[in-house]
Length: 83
Image 1 (cartoon, one colour):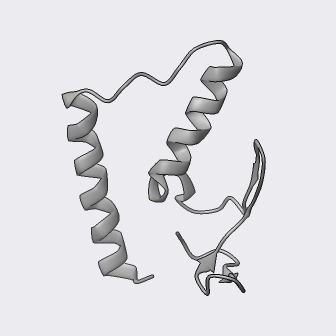
Image 2 (tube, rainbow, N blue to C red):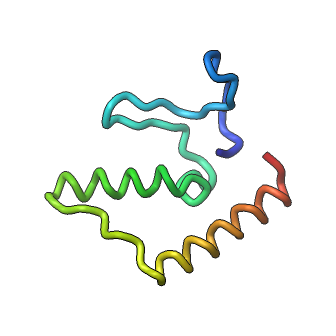
């Protein structure tokens, strides 16, 4: 999500940004890419932890509360500047 150099996915018709090939991920990083894409941020953290022989810990109530605040902040950004 964001305002980068997004184009239309010819197969799904959706707006896409960046590229993914196996464990390699690339995007035009400018603006709030990771905060606006929390699933991608989680995947990035999990991949880094796997390289060190660890796992991303399961979300607890504290993380769920922060995630909810972040979701509301993302919604407010979208309302204010659009998609």
